[in-house]
Length: 334
Image 1 (cartoon, rainbow, N blue to C red):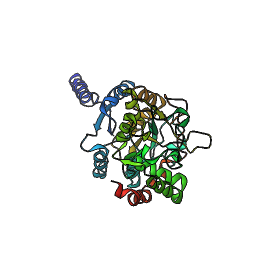
Image 2 (image 1 turned 120 degrees about the vertical axis):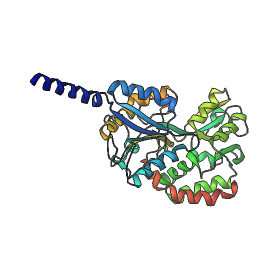
Image 3 (image 1 turned 180 degrees about the vertical axis):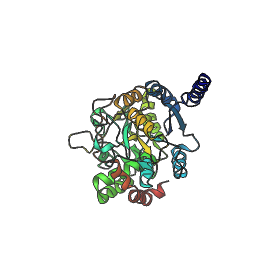
Image 4 (image 1 turned 135 degrees about the horizontal axis):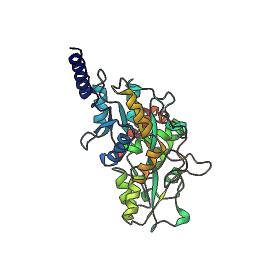
């Protein structure tokens, strides 16, 4: 009888083990980063930790906004553990709505404070930067622009310059950054001069890139990803990072951001994934793969870039006032 009871207990334990022991640990990440760049990374994380990554990617139809809305709609019963964005404005929006949890990932001491939330709600790493794409057939090397102020100081005729509408995308973010850096009055006057000088205001960074590459303008203001495309295509252009001198204010870097979702169902696993994502090794991997163009850390990446000495939150806080001004100044330029 005792042997029979013991056998039953063993069988019951085995059944429990089969039901529970085989269940994999998991973590859920919502990411605006393209799947082609994520899959190898997530595979590495799974090998290192044994934690299965369940990833939800954005789509061409909804972009990042769809993922943000999903986090908001799930606030009462969160599904997502980690939100990995390819910019920072909507990440800070989630923070403002109280939907992120404080967590400072390990190994982020070498990330400048400008790219970390002061209270630990998000961490930024890698990304792209604002650059001036110069047509080398139209512009002598000694005349290459060095600063955003070359758009207003008479170094070039207005019609020889192109800028995307500053009400959208990274040009909108750059306007907010300049408001944070220079103050409202000085930044507003800068953009008024841009308009008064007849700078060509066009539909997006890819258009400014195309115009510079085709020789329609001498200088097009764009992002590193677009500029790199022109270089790969063999266009007669050179990429200039503005305001890099000792007294320069630096250029805007638009980084990725990663954060732990409040009430994350797999919080501890989410923290492990965050440690992995914002590490120097992951940043280096994404630079080598061509997703990131620049590093927020020093001495990493193809381009050593001086970014603006502003916390990303300072830029976020200027968006409303700067966007209103950009509408007033450039609305009839569309």
